[in-house]
Length: 154
Image 1 (tube, helix red, strand yellow):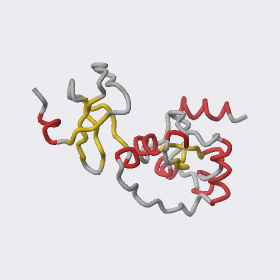
Image 2 (tube, rainbow, N blue to C red; image 1 turned 180 degrees about the horizontal axis):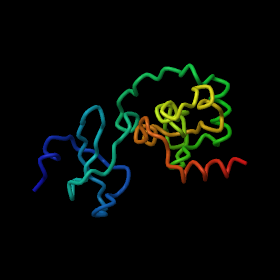
Image 3 (cartoon, rainbow, N blue to C red; image 1 turned 45 degrees about the vertical axis):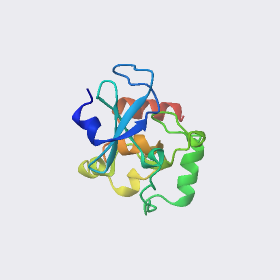
């Protein structure tokens, strides 16, 4: 019997098998919730992932270039990170939209008294895909990941 969530959503083909029940059919249900496209497994009813708008065929929200990251700096960061998301490794061949964002977030940096100019240096910027950037939100990445990325870049 389908769950209430599945009854409210539309049929959707998931990009990978459910990590909870490993049901091989990859049948899912797409339920828009608070601006997110939530994909639920049709077999077990659990949340599989939040799908970016580009994956579900919707037009992505227009992005406004940030004033603190110049186009040349954006190109430099993309080149340094080999046009790949630093969290999941996906790149343009998977038809993902790539963003440049802060490792130490502007919010956390402001709370620590760090000026925006310092937070917007190349060392604190990285490439993220749509899904990872949405998942990260306005939070900083973990100190462990930040240390790993900084050690790789030397």
